[in-house]
Length: 205
Image (cartoon, rainbow, N blue to C red; front, side, top):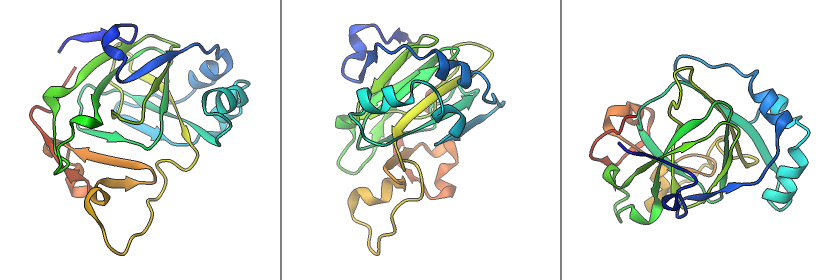
């Protein structure tokens, strides 16, 4: 699979590179664990104490309350795609590869062909905004030592989903607060209640 750069024109439908100087956040991110698998922490107090927190919250999110967490580890497989009703900021410490698609290509039955996805390398320390309509999931390794990626979202995202007496259409994709997910059958996420709707190859890097 061809890996493009987030500076390529091909990245424009998915997001943009932000001009952020965040040395304290990156220093704190470097101290977070890197497991053999993948770990996600939605809100990490040690990262939210960084000197740049107010800048990110006010300038990037317009004052909306945000959380700073991380997704760390080792991964080379797609397994699923998710989307939110908001942008997401990703900032890798070592660099990372993001597998991205467009929500506009999801079928009316909420299936999605993985052949529509593209891979993009994000350099170390580069902050990228992924638009609300961008399908994404866990980062993939750019380097052998794994990845540490700061994930910034509106506060409460990825916490417990709302309780609904009756599900309608897209509701079956809702796996957490502000998180709609479509899984591949090879991921095993169907056993956890995820909607299995990815068609085609379970992409690997």
